[in-house]
Image (cartoon, rainbow, N blue to C red; front, side, top):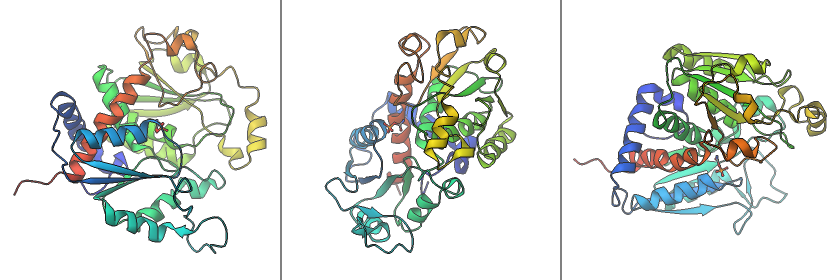
Length: 336
Ligand code: CP
């Protein structure tokens, strides 16, 4: 493996191989596997899980890591190609990324959506541009429209819990949130579940349908794996028989880049907060998933998050095992 950018590049067999390694590392530690290896972590946006799980995972494998958060003790970095750099940014990623790569054996980058231009964000243009100047194995730690590390950990969680792949019913539900949030996690979640062969329903209010390229990519994955993808605004019908409700908020594509219009558009939708009543027609052991961080009693009620359906901490723990498998595949020297 030369990079970890997208589950689609691995396909179902590649994901199965990585998750077998993740489970092996969970059962049988390899504290010297990456001895002497260094991971650089470049965070343009905040994190709790991604930052901590990569550092912990690298340490558990005998390697080390360092973190750069531009503007917090380091120079503010410019990401725009062709920018006239007479503002706050003192350095361009075109220099900074090769410099960091010179100190490390692999690089992880987190760079969220700009949130102003839907087409540019759907094209993942900022992340792709940075990938183009990275000379070492690169890991996508969440870009504008993908979060493959979250998707890999979530796939492991579904496997750990014995949730069916073929015939398994996965509902990604939109939830109300005070801010317009990016499309990366919903895009990654529907793609992951479809690639796993599940029947995926995107439940959302009218006007919050996922952009066509995101749905098309998930449908392509479903076609490869025997699953299906559909969207609906009918909550009762969507949740009937569900094995998983995965909650996440995302911005309304029709008001992308216009926070005031988007806020007005979602104003009447505060009842999109997952409560125990949502599970009345779901499978009896239906699970609740969320990537975290989550706002209690806004996105999901305490009664669900604190109850037996919630697997959010299990998901977060699996981020580490899944990413350790990625690091192992990227950096472990193969015996001659
Ligand atoms: N789920 C996730 O990526 O969490 P962080 O934003 O805390 O890294």
